Amino acid sequence: GTPDPYLEAALASMPLVNFWIEPKMPSSPMQGTDLIIASGKAVPESSIPMLLINPADSGFWGTRDGTISPAPFTSLSRTSPLVRHAGLAHVVVEEAPRWEPAPGAEVIASSENSPLIFGHWDRSPRWLVMGFDLQNSDLPLRTAFPILLANILQSLRDSAESPDNQGRGFDTAGGSASSPDREQTNGQDRSLQKSVPREPGSAILPGATESLLHPLAAADSEASVSRGGSSWPGWWLFVLAAALLLVAEWGLFHRRITD
Image 1: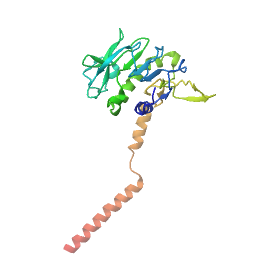
Image 2: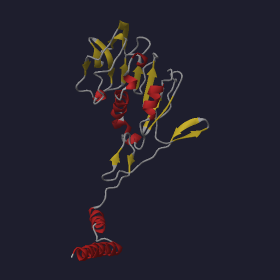
Image 3: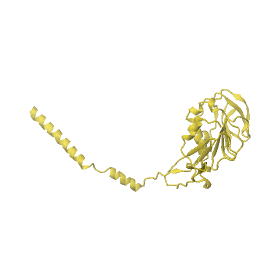
Image 4: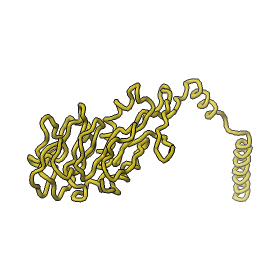
């Protein structure tokens, strides 16, 4: 869809996420794509998970009929992990289409009786609709926006960490989120598969790749503490003795004068 600087900035800020922009929906998305983001476009259903931002018309996701203005968030799902910690309650939406979601879709957020965020995310085919124009909202200006996107990508992590996809990050097209390492081959992106071994105590980052932050062994820790707690260097003792001697001489000198 149309490039969105706020969406691009939010995706670019996330570690292990690569994305690229397609002016229109490709007939066959690049192999390894984990998520398709369609902004302001009506697109066909896909086996790849899709995030649809303000679809231009009705489609497999539901029926668009009329508008609601203003459209404050009045109801939020208490169980959906997609809006966890996002803090959408105070987001301002000046105007939003009125949607009738497709049968079986879950309404995650709504304004009165009009769905704002809804989808079919817990089973295939996976799709999610943000049913309003980001330009008519202050959502991109709030921390809720990158948190919401991060929750969506995090929800894809289980499938990304399956044995068939071990070692991959996220690819987004349309954008589309991609593997952490890519190289250009004959003008085309090619994902570089990396398998990072799991280490006890390593810090798990978004995606399947882990940082190799090895835990400090107990013996090493005790040894470092004992070394750090050793006596001061010898020259410090000389400085301390000299300071004490200077104070003593000063005291005796003044005592002699007063006597």
